[in-house]
Image 1 (cartoon, rainbow, N blue to C red):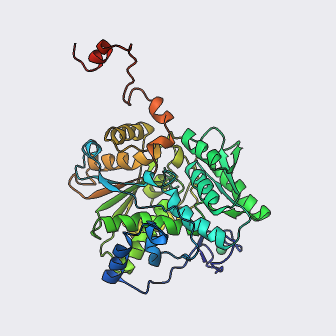
Image 2: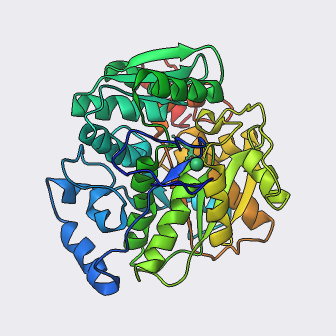
Image 3: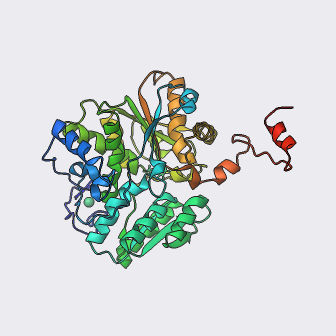
Length: 412
Ligand SMILES: *Cc1c(COP(=O)(O)O)cnc(C)c1O
Ligand SMILES: [Zn+2]
């Protein structure tokens, strides 16, 4: 691993997830794959039918592109998520060909499982005595499940009162020690980092470089599903910026391995109330100003994004764009995705809200090939539906009579 700040090298086989010299983020140095181009595509295609073992995983199937040891993996499996046409939500966004890659269909309901299988496999390899993370909810749910699978004790640090019900229920149900911290996500992350340094717990936050390796496969699997003909744009919600970082890494790796020729442009979408990355982009990435975050999209309610530097590189390398959208626009997009029968949690809908904005502003043409990544499942945050009766479908309470049904059907 190499420090992204001071370039110090640290053995890949260590407990460190940040630089012991300067505290900077560590990056895994991937060796170029021994197989390239057509032969590599063929190898990936052959593994697709596997029903067990690491080839059945939509992460480990692409191991030639991951800087991680693929022995002794902890896998459910994960990945293998569908790429589907966005139906009525595509029309809503003004982009009739819009497709969505539904990462909410991972084992614990978010893309976090892709990073967690790689991170937890490394924790097992290190014989970690315990694992921990700070989380807005989905990382906690994923960590708790994979720790249970691996048989390693888990500790999760969650901002009190700011986590959606479904996610909290998962962390508890899968058996993690769940610590509700009086503070925001950024306070949880500092605390988890301190616990890792002082208490010898292995940290599996998104700053953990092994997690980013796993998250690269969202893009690699998507490219394979596109027949290795990349879309023009890939849109994603952006919070702590681990995914934005991983997407850029994946696209460059795919190009260097001869899998694709052209890089799609990344569209990273933040919420107006938590938009330090969008503000930095608008100022030419001159500096990052942390903010006190406040958005209904809890998974991207982050004011001081940890993977900022690497995410800036992703946007530059892909000629990408960073914007922010209002909570209203996010909830409207969520209602459109839900009503299409697809469904997602609020943060995920930021991607589709962002595409609608870019089409309205004339930056994305209506016929362009766009893929939005839906990062989490509808059931993560059922309150977001029930709390918004103006936008969601309505309940009809009736007497138990056929007349009641007739009225709802509009037959009288
Ligand atoms: C973690 C998460 C995000 C944000 O991803 P980052 O890598 O932190 O930018 C967005 N949506 C959902 C559902 C998430 O769980
Ligand atoms: Zn360093």
